[in-house]
Image 1 (tube, rainbow, N blue to C red):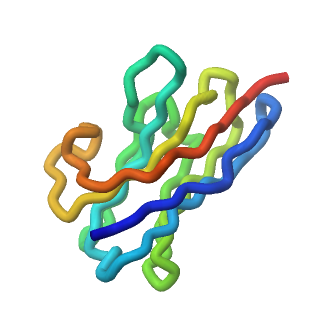
Image 2 (cartoon, rainbow, N blue to C red):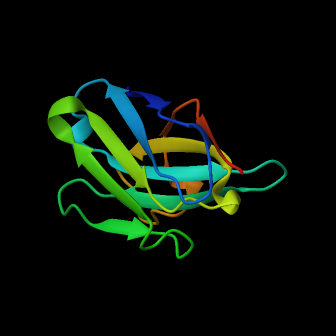
Length: 124
């Protein structure tokens, strides 16, 4: 069993940066694949970034490649999402998700555990 808590969201201006954190409770979090997703009002939940345990392979959605960076600190049971050069279209609730077995990192249905989400609003 894993519990996930996101933090770090807020209201920022275009071009600003934010760092989201996904803190996990539970044993062996280092052996979980972790993904970040986002959901804007009236839209589906979209994949943003993911990181596998073991290989450490990292994946990004095309829309955030070059601007966002996912990383993990296993000693702190935390996965981060550094978001730079934020745009209004990045506005959404951001969720982290985890699972021990994931084939398609971009598919929300592959994940067993979800956090409650943190709001990111990019507006001038």
